[in-house]
Image (cartoon, rainbow, N blue to C red; front, side):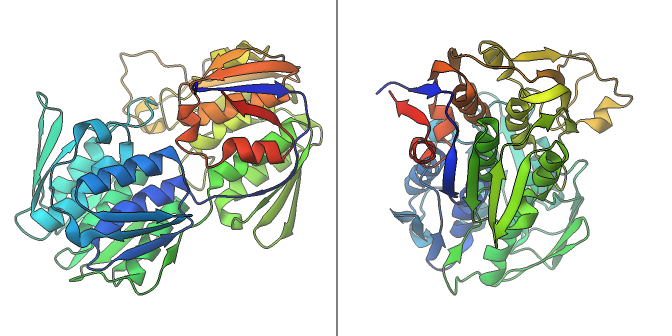
Length: 439
């Protein structure tokens, strides 16, 4: 089978979509399960390529893992390896979170540089600094590509993130669960997915609390799951189908997702004129109404999520006027721009004067490097079919929606990127009336 979709666009998407579990929760709780002194049962886990890769990696470490329907059962008692496989870890960025369970089990571990989508300077330096602050000894061997870590006593101390880090905060939480006394993680990320991880650990006996922008962890001796844990729905998938409905001038209802996961996006597109209606608890209807231009910039939660900005870009091709999107989180998040131009989109890079870019941007800003962090989108623009290539996960969903909007036939290559994060994408789009086929 080819790594491609063929899409015949120009049809309104209408109907309802049941959301899958959140990729960015599922990956973290699967790793956190290795911290438990019991079997762990996790519900609503999406059947996506990233999950399959991580489960394979956990099995290589010796964990017993069963995946039936959307439920994963993990028995961590059989883990016998403390070195993470280089090839499989390179395929998935969250593999470096294995520092925590492997250090607690073996007191030492070898973890390779993380993989995943290459969106720019996603340095794990802040994570390594955090481990050092808790008393973990970590060195990097550039010849092998591995970090060597040793834990000769219980973690203790305090760490302040210079800039909030989503996955870094999750790492520090996991490293602190069995710590010596109270560990405070300052300037912690506020993303709601982190709260799911905290809930899983607290239900198992951990003592973790949020105090403003800090997270306070009181060490415990062990974790034991008392009941199965169900993760929340995926807020990026929710917005993907919302945008697909609006952009194709259709009418799509999604369920179920709590308001706080998508409030920022809902507020933004309502301000742009889009049709939004809450029809029940956790159920939302998104439908087309004439759109006008907007200016947005990405920011940590509760700001505009970086994973939403490619989707917002495709929506803004249909808005009246000139819209501006400014990316603050990653340095390489516009891989979709040239591909959308192939379909007739009018998008240009523009300069946005930033007085203190080192403080403004959340990636490792290099003053010697030239960046393109802002685009201007002119609309409304009628798109036509074409051939596009996917470079990363969220760009994949954006290009697929563009093809669904466009008149005629489009061919999208490299869709394995999209399938890393979307469960049943072809089936869900087809159910809404989209003409899409995996080749």
